[in-house]
Image 1 (cartoon, one colour):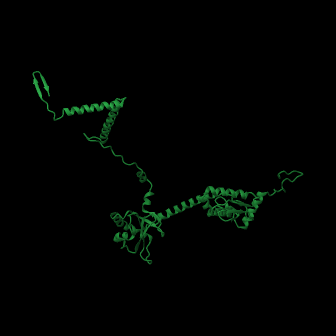
Image 2 (tube, helix red, strand yellow):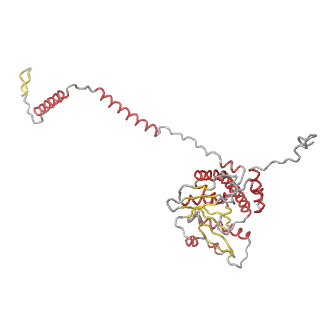
Image 3 (tube, one colour):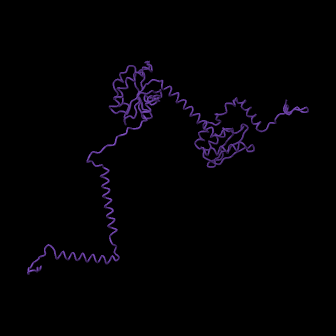
Length: 370
């Protein structure tokens, strides 16, 4: 039975909804997508409607960019407004406004000379609506996509490098001032006598040195397996020379691509090994038993403690003497008394000096000294 149908009415069978502004907007977008051969499904979810240059400038000044984007969206939503004028600003900021206007489908123009030069934005028939996604959302989408792509590339590189053969030597932390000619002259003679191979010495941006094996001539055809076997055989004499002459801290096998990027190191395999080796590597350091002192030996802490104790005792005695010293009310009288005592002592020393002559007269029980 049809909705609202009755004997006198056919219901809503022949009724249709009137097209409002939202309906007209969707219809315009549909026709525009058909005219430009755009798939609407491709512009959902992770679609970014802004250019890379706009996103780059937005990431440099996020807060200011959000303020300008808000002005654009308010202007785009108001059908009565046909022109938006910004205040004067530097050239770099005007460039961002021009790029953002292009992404919105608006026309823009710089007006007036410096320092009053500003940007004016206009609505034209090609403008439809503001992008649904904000700049911040698109930056987040782009960062997530870049991170996912980087992880995939790194995983592919790791899987590819694990299967690639060694073709070079990597010297880490080379000696300061070491040159390519000096290193070539110090290398063992076996590296020069390897049949069909030649070694190129290069410095990496990380200040490491690589010795990459290659066919000696363009007509020489050597497989990667043969190159790996050759560099493995040469590792022992080269590592011995590097260690004995202190040319570098370590020498290890590695895999290089044509651009001298290190794809694989010899130590990477041991670093990725699972099992008991990782548990043992994280073990606690060995504990050392405390050293027992012999009979009659004194600990350095005892000696230091006794010296500190004596110094503390002397300091307390000095402070106590200062406290017990009586205070004088009349310091002038005390000074005069000390001077008189000093004069008396000096006079006695003159009388009883070393040159004084003493004569003793004995009168029975009485002795007189002159």
